[in-house]
Amino acid sequence: MAFKTAAASSATFGISALTAATRSRTTFSALALASTVLLASCSTTSQTTDLITVDRAQGSEQNIASLTAVIAANPQDPEGYNVRGSAYGRAGEFRRALDDFNQAIQLNPQFYQAYANRALVYRNMGKPVEAASDYNRSLQISSNYDVAYIGRGNIYRQAGRNDEAFNDFNRAIELDTTDGRAYHNRGLIYQLRGQHAQAIEDFSKAISLSSTAAEPYNGRAVSYLALGDDENAFADINHAIELNDKLAESWTNQGLVYERRGDTQRAARSYSHAVGLDPNYQPAKDGLSRTRGS
Image (tube, rainbow, N blue to C red; front, side, top):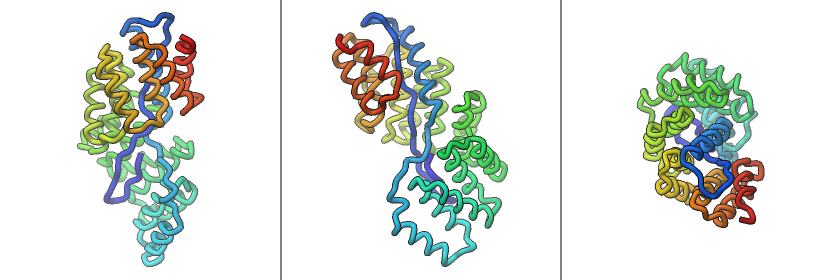
């Protein structure tokens, strides 16, 4: 999730729902594949969806010095601390980010954006309880703040509380959010429920709001695969790779389609590439073990 100041935001995606399948022959039914695809996608996407993408340039000496000068000129303005805290957060300097958000909240206890920003830092620090508390406080102050619903929804989803997560994503969408993550994340829950038509609709909406994000293409591909639409799935997977070729899940999905087609050599190359990107990604390891030497 990107940081939001009082006036601006940008939507980012994290790891999306992806695939694995287990089989003994080179062809198998779409129904059997759909079951394994969904099981794997649920386990991967429960880990993270919208955490901070670290950009060290945000914490450059020049940038921080400029923001610090603004604070020095207006030391009682909480917005300055919120903005600098966001810069520290994007740079991965979470302790300094927390200090700034704490100061912003001390100066303005009703600063709901600062609570949501601090929640995001807590999430990146592996502190979901503190993060949930801050999202709750943000929503107590401003019950129509879509960012807090999306953030809290992700905490619920990672905890397996999918109904509550679904309600939060729904609420953000009801508020006419332009943040594609709300649709993407709701689509993941539709997948969990086997409601692939609705999932595809949500992923498509997420793509329309953030067309350069790879994850919703991967998510949509999973549902296409579950419905036996390999052609559209393969197109989405390849486009996801074009957008971001560093996601092991995308290459694993590509390998899965090749495997379904009986092209085990290409499947093995895709799985191998995925393992090279993430040696711990089990669906890729499983796929490679099935196809290596075929």
